[in-house]
Amino acid sequence: MKLEPEWEAEVAKDFMERYRAGGKAEVVFDHNVGRTRWDKLLYNATVNPLCAILEMSVGDLGESGVAETVIRPAVLELVSIAGSLGIEIEEDEVEATLQGVMAGGDFEPSMLADRKKASQR
Image (cartoon, rainbow, N blue to C red; front, side, top):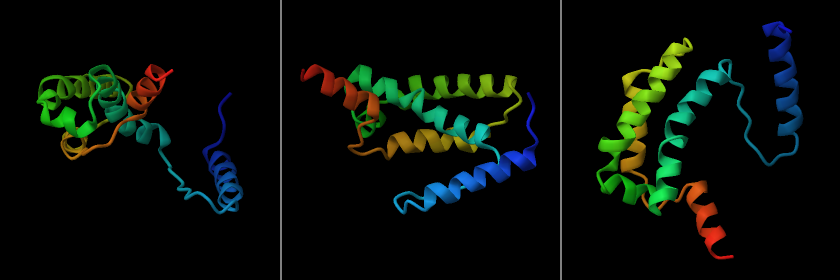
């Protein structure tokens, strides 16, 4: 079933207003949420599992040299997959993902936090 884009946008904006009325969240309308999800996936599909497997914060991962040897090739593979689906991801977005790793500091992604929590049981 194909929905009309205008109707979808109207329903989404109505939902946003209702959600915003709760006063506890910032809500932003995105005309291309599928594309935005790919931006997030570049980071989450590479950095999140590596931090959990290696038990490292994002900053430690960046300092380890893994950003160039493991994360860049994985991100480029995701870019290729996105391209095969008609979603173009620019080189600057790849670089932004890698810079996010290098500037990650002590941040621990959710998979690492979950792993630590599970090991405490």
